[in-house]
Length: 196
Image (cartoon, rainbow, N blue to C red; front, top):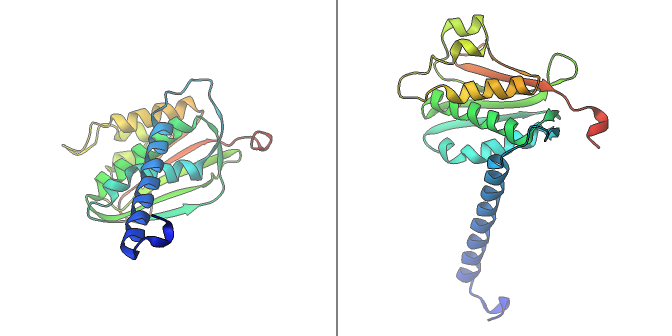
């Protein structure tokens, strides 16, 4: 049967199948990038916008549970690091934010230059209940053991902290105007010569 001989219903079904196949392909590609075991020497230019988009794609099924609004704020930012490990941080921060909003709220993922020269930043902000005041007075280590009962072990944030340090970066819980939490990763920017 030629393409011209297909009924409109057949054409629509084929389009839906093709769309589903493309989504499956993208999921597999994102999972492969995320799960590949990195070598410590595998560091180079990493587009943080792509890291953020891949992380959002991987957590999309969890974002559909309830009424969660996602806001992207993206400026060009190229880090010097390991793409898989930086994506692991982004996924962990998003999962933490999803747990915090508990099915209703807003999550903002932002990428861009950091205030300090030669550094770039990826942050995840949520409108959840926020973290203990102690966390705002110190750094991420202060909140690693303050997860509400039944909402994870805090190991995800501990791993994020370790990866950030291995990249010569930091990850902190920052104060912001609204309730909730803002976790911010800052890592060295890739030299302009390495981006070509």
